[in-house]
Length: 339
Image (spheres, helix red, strand yellow):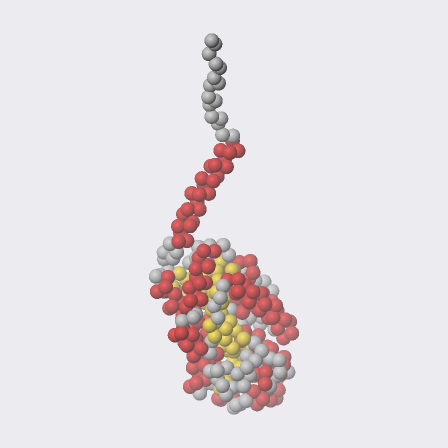
């Protein structure tokens, strides 16, 4: 009988060029993804930097140093605070916007750097929305109208009367162009129908020194930096910018009690260069949120007149969007501009 025919086994086909390239690309992707994932899981492996876009001694500086002090033991790395003042916060913000997005550089943003400056400056060195991403909402604070006792006024009504009798002769200081100190005062000028001359500084610290020395006549500044001088009697608080009285200054009326509809609060937020790994952003946000829930931290901030907030990066993104719309309108109505 003839032997049955058995087909010889076929040799395996060589992979097509397309499949070979895909496999190579997948291997390369895995090779690059592994170190990236490892780097993120090991974060931080060196000191982390938070840039304060104003001089030392102001509220932005106080808030940042409080958070840095709390983060250092949690992250097991030193969290360094770096003051880079200038151009209403633009110098420091621009430095962070252009920093490597590796999770080692962050900005303590303010209404100026995140919402206001883009409507005040004819040319911005960075794009607020495209170059910086939200990490964590830290605290919100009211501002307070303050004057030295040497000015001779003790109420907001007396200040308005004095300003009207000396148009342009009184001066007000702010922590810088684009700060809520400037915009809050410009809004006050519009509502009170007075004209006082703006003197911008490189932060609350140097501005307060001149106010204490009588070189300028008044200011609207963040409550935390102004509070020690109010408590000591070296400055007089004429009104808070929140719609309701502040618990730390229960006897000081809101400016809105004299100028209905007036309201302007400040806030401080952590943001990062766009491209910072999401795993790092989410972890830092979660750590800050936990810190802001600690009773001793809450007590410390509230003692300064600040209210801890926290939340997710998405929560902060919504807040910044709403505040951008609000301050754009304030700039338009007040006619404020960079001096």
